Image (tube, rainbow, N blue to C red):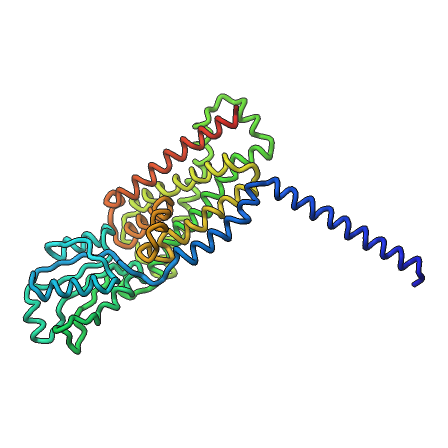
Length: 373
């Protein structure tokens, strides 16, 4: 290869490098102008860092429990004080009998109840179990934490045999699939429902159909409702697939009535779809809509109680979790599917989801009207 050929190849490589450099600089300038995308570049890792480093904690503490103290003696008060001092549980209520305590567990008001019988002092003298922990086993991580109290020392009443009997409701085998499958339902619906509607208005704009919709006599609210109606049916298909296969493949019990499951699913599907509509009225492109969906999806999964109990999170993280629809749906669907209670019993979560849906529709409608101007 002669010198002229070497020079030609060098010039060609130099021109190629310059073209690559020019395109790279253009992409950087475009990214700098796209403030939403640039913000996601910073915020997504920041949120992940805060969630995993600050909010997410597998060391469960201060689990809400109740007490059925039929003994009302110094020893019973000592046992309750020992349980409270362990910082594993937080005694928030007292009940007259086990029936009332079990009802509170079913409603999700407490995670467990400590039963202390009338003959507590005699049991202590005879080295018999002093009492009984009645535990909601539907959340295996919380259940395992309370099970550690089986050997809780009681001072003078300490004995070689375990001082407490442990009874697990709803998941006595402590199978993780029983806890995961209903929670997974909220995660998958969040991913699909929010993503589908987050690109709804943006897609119309990119395809040039938005001007056509503007010229029609359809009101903004009618358009918002029309956008979410088809996806409600898709949401029910996903509910049927997840719960059906979960029951067949993993033997997950479905104790609740199918009507109640459908009702709980309707609340959450509508709330997720309206959240996607709000994103769709903010985003300018489908890429931005997907980025914002990921921005919402991360805390919705990690703070919902699906993977990590809310009791293990700091107060600030719990406050943020209560603002997310998936947190309320996770409590609702686990209560209906695993504990067999009516959705009306969990009315605060159901009302919150309906309220979120109505407020979200209003916000999406107002923002769409603003863009029409």
